Image (tube, rainbow, N blue to C red; front, side, top):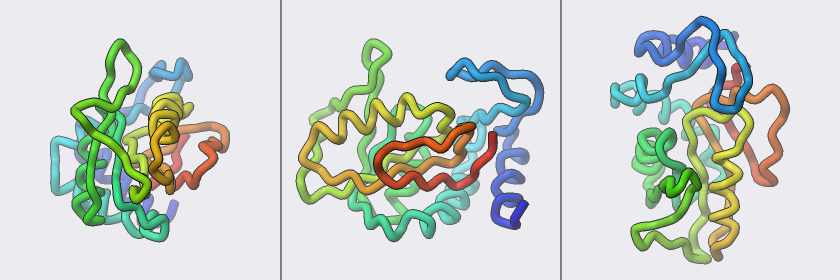
Length: 166
């Protein structure tokens, strides 16, 4: 494991966001580890550090707008937007589906980076991408704190996770 990955895992462990045991994930998959990113998101200094580690990995995508699906991506998405000097908006759940509300809109000048906390099968990300692709904005990529996918996910846009861990 490289040094940045070890620092990331240490942050998750320190904040009790990385749990060990037997878990059934929202995706239905089973795992010996569970990331409860809400735990790390209570500590804004840790969120800031995770964003500092993630920003250089996605900077070449040149986003102007960060979009985060509720709830998981909100805190890291807002911090990424702050550090990258981007506009930030979020998608909300309505009847268990993501929707863009609050008069948020995306324009042709927007280069959108979707930010999520944990991706396992990519269902919420795909929902977010469908909403964004239904606007005139340019989708420039997807990022997340932790990629838990067993397979390589194809979102038909660059996918740049901070940490890959099944």
